[in-house]
Length: 378
Ligand code: AMP
Image (tube, rainbow, N blue to C red):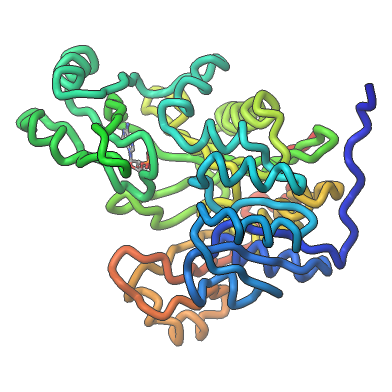
């Protein structure tokens, strides 16, 4: 058996990115800095990624002919979002290396798979129950208690497909609000105990084809209306809890045999425990601060892992607060540009509708601990 890892993909090669949003855009910019070309596959015309990519295929994620042409035009395939149909990934994988693999995407596509994966690996989560009917919901609420959160298992993000079950919430109403699945069938939900958390953290870890990993410092995240508002570095965690958070993310990456980047979002309870919430096998909004505060940012690290290059240092030279610019927030670009501590990032989106991530701003300050971190790595 030949165990040697695949060779690095040389600069000048073409990286295929599935998905055309801001994560793809920032990944394409990082790829360009390393001399790669990016070909994006997205159903969206004039997508944030296509604006900065060498080539774009605009087609549905299920368009087999377009996927075939795309696979022929690229040297490796990756994803900036994970909700890609299995058949499409299979088709791509038959033609070119796909990193991360389908197994990784599959776990991350479904909240139930996520939670089973965490618990099977001995990683604590909020209490949860699978819910496929109103009767299931009634049993689940009786078991878990109120308050709780009912979530759809697939295609939910930024709080979409979530209902809080309070003392007076009518369960029939809550179940109806889940709607139907995309194919018209009954929805599948998961009921989670509501965590009265002290805070939320995330850890982003990269793992290369050779199994070497490198993690960024844990980030402290504040959500408003379920959407990430700010990320603060360093997170106000004890060294012990920070190490635990990193260890959880690394364990997930290793168990998955990940090649690429993994973001794991976690709750910190008031009694000092970490509970895993969800994970995403791609660059993550809570890692945007790394662009301005680290030697190697999450997007470059992602490109390095996908191209089988050695990983870079996750060393952090500054403290940082990243703020998302949602909807009309982005109109304050002039004031942000006038702030000498601020780095502005706009995503090239034309319409600023409510809840839409238009950009972000990272404010840097010298590290209070005077240190020069090296993140965590093997
Ligand atoms: P999610 O889509 O699961 O990442 O949820 C988005 C946000 O909603 C989380 O980052 C939390 O702020 C909040 N949230 C989700 N699930 C829970 C929970 N079980 N308990 C408390 N807050 C939650």
